[in-house]
Amino acid sequence: MSESPARTVLIVDDHEVNRRLASLFLQPLGWRAVMAINGAQALDIAAVQRFDVILMDRMMPGMDGLETTASLRQSDGPNRDTPVIAVTGMDDDRAQWRALGVTQIVLKPFDPDQLIAAVAEATRPQQGGYRISA
Image (cartoon, rainbow, N blue to C red; front, side, top):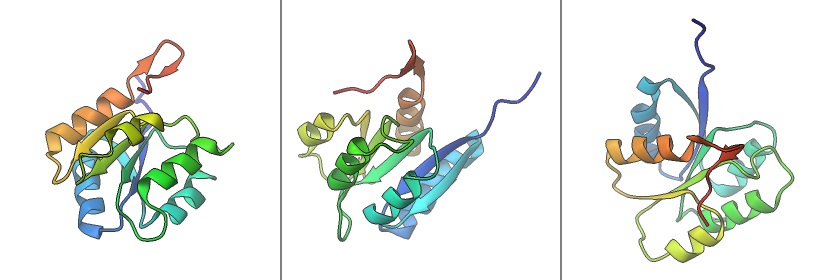
């Protein structure tokens, strides 16, 4: 039996501890993490590398998570339709996130089981592609 290819997550958060925690929670499940410290860096990375899922922080200096996700969705890059999970301490932006096609919202401080469940749900194949909630 051949092993399935490693899955890759882009973790976008300006706080190193949050990036490392998310990576540590997903690593035992075979996920490889690429990290970005802000929205501009995330867009640069996402323009050249395909990801299975993107974890997006809301509050970042410069371009915030909502702006970054909007730019990602408007791009012609390889991650235009990649599932995005909002990882945020704010619970009042749900309508804005959903309007951008964000698959899940995980509140900080995040619970490892909640994060893993959100990633599993976001990357579960559906008829012809990923399920993206609007």
